[in-house]
Image (cartoon, rainbow, N blue to C red; front, side):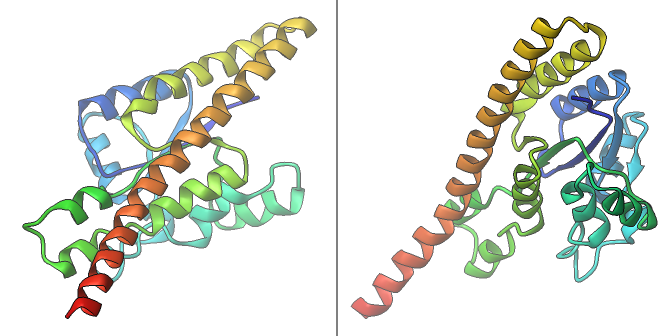
Length: 214
């Protein structure tokens, strides 16, 4: 297993994110990042490819940033299919191996009594969860919150060690452990998304009850 390219898009932008991405870069992983995340990381000297140079600037007041064929193609392209690689290259993109997408804190927004209903609905993330589920579908290495940083870095290290040590027994065990770690991350990512969207469901459910009571 080789991890060459990573896509980073994070609502939470702090020193922990910077440290995580720097460690990825030190592992000779090419970083791709979306608009705001790219600007934040480059401010700390991180060398990366800003996705806006490929897909253009955000549209519709930042509602459409990552939703594009190049971005989703880089996540969903099947590396085993030459045609997929050709089509991706035509878009100016490469296949992703690792995906860290930290969505808007939708559940937090819907719990905030000071926010209006419109403000809450504005914080329903679309592109982030879609990218995460695309990554799971294509069985990439995927994380969605800072608590995943250590696991993601451990997977990167194990993947790199597997390319150096060639003993069959070691590789078989390493691949087995890698798959376990990757699938545990999938479970955590999906649980994260369920919790975010459940907040929307619960809000709508309570709102519907009030309408009927009125």
